[in-house]
Length: 265
Image 1 (cartoon, rainbow, N blue to C red):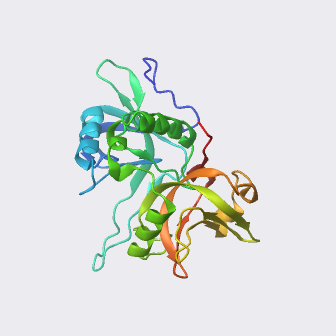
Image 2: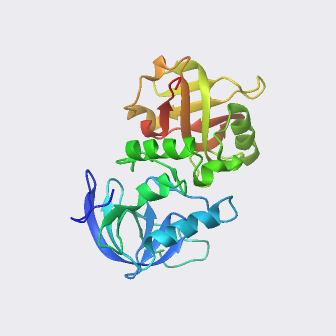
Image 3: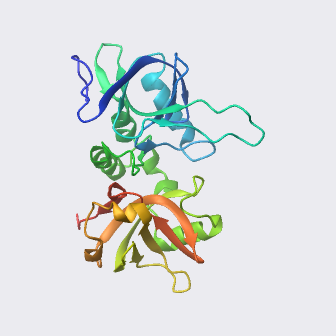
């Protein structure tokens, strides 16, 4: 991914340039212009999470005090809701792919490096998934080789039983921003497709708390992935927020990029 002839942008669109003056967690930067950047399509451990300090250290080593170019493949800006009692609107943050100029003058794609090192995991969204296919392939290799966070038990893919317990403990709607984001692997016991929604029932959940993957609303209407009705018996990996609906735990998909069909290999 290194190039001496300028960043290889591919399908994403060229954006602003700047110099990184600060790194937050393992997935957020600040430029000398004051613009804060969330790294598109990935997320890193943060706060008290296992491997959070290492992820931030990797990010700092890659970008701090270096020139960068932003590029966009989806929604470009995000604005936080004002906190209670706050009168001023918080400043916008960019949601971007970042290309970094190394000390030798070559450019590299930051998301590629963070995922390949196991310092971040892939988090595609319905409005930001332009490079998810490439990033998921990198993550799969990092997972197989137990690089970085993938060597930690905390980041092993969940089963429907453990995912269901976490969802019930949090007891949140999966559309809420603070709903726990997790990756799980399981076999689909039954694919149920209706006019406006679909539920993929998963093997391995207790009978008293059946677990499903849900696709509904605009996400169902815009679905462009594998035929959902054909997934009975398939082994899948899914990543999205966990929630509870009518006392039953579920994982809610926004986009087909959040669902992988696993082969026997």
